Image (cartoon, rainbow, N blue to C red; front, side, top):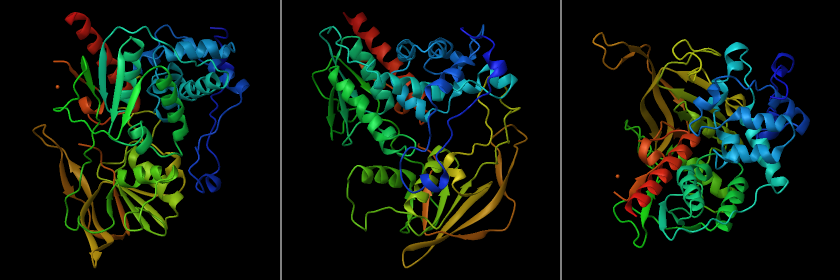
Length: 442
């Protein structure tokens, strides 16, 4: 490393978010950027540890010490080449990855100030695009054709890897554009969709064919291909079957998120079909990232109030998590940029029923609960811990998560709903398995 003592003198510095009063007025990205000088200083804090736990923690096997050193020395072309060697789409992960590498950083253990790897990824890639370091490659073809079913992060990663191995790749996508949950689930204030369009255009220049509006089932694969990767995701959301579920105003989270993203690129919906939080009291059921995205979207649509409830206990306040010590991911309380914009949060809350008048939701009956351990070691038992109460709600958003020869499965279709970076890693594994199968067949 060029400056192996920088972490002793340079504190962690994040770019931060746009002011709340400004950012809730639009769907522009909330995260700001550091200037190039500050970014190089942040990269210099990487210690090039003897055992790089950041590399161990990353599902893609990213090697932050290598590209951080290149950033510190001002060689962003080399930094992107090193980053892109393991990460197909660092412009995506640099915006939406929870940065498992940072929690495993030795500086997180000692100072709770890890290297800003995630922000560095985004900066490296944006500079690489700006300086035209990223150019389409022209792989030598091997004469084989493969189909990738699904254009989410795992399907895109598999397609990218297979294309560069020489396969003629066709990606079938049921939606009108590529990206999967990157496009239709993650709000623009976290990931501007022009970032996706830019990468898809590059992949098309490199020879990948995208066919949109074509839903393909795993048991009815298109003919004419040597092998297939199925990366269709987990499209079935977990429902909440309590009395009143049929009331108008109870929606799955993705009904709101995907529709809003489509509206932002010009799609139109009738007033009856439009899912909106404008002037409404909003209840979000589910405490994960999707629930947080609903909160941010509700604010930008002009909601009256937002409450988020979670059936599980409140996570411990960090930075340390005794149940998952370093370098494992700490399951501590997470406060997102959307939470900062205003939201009442409650834990250990069970939903009993939805209440309405004339078919329209007006409130939700909820109840505080506790979890009792099973003395026999089975699943904990939910028990009442308080009286039921009714909270006012004009709209409820259910954000509770989502419920294989020559066909290779990848991403959420294989493993269940997880992180974008894990989906991409699964796409890599599927591409490697397919390539090995084709070579063995030959």
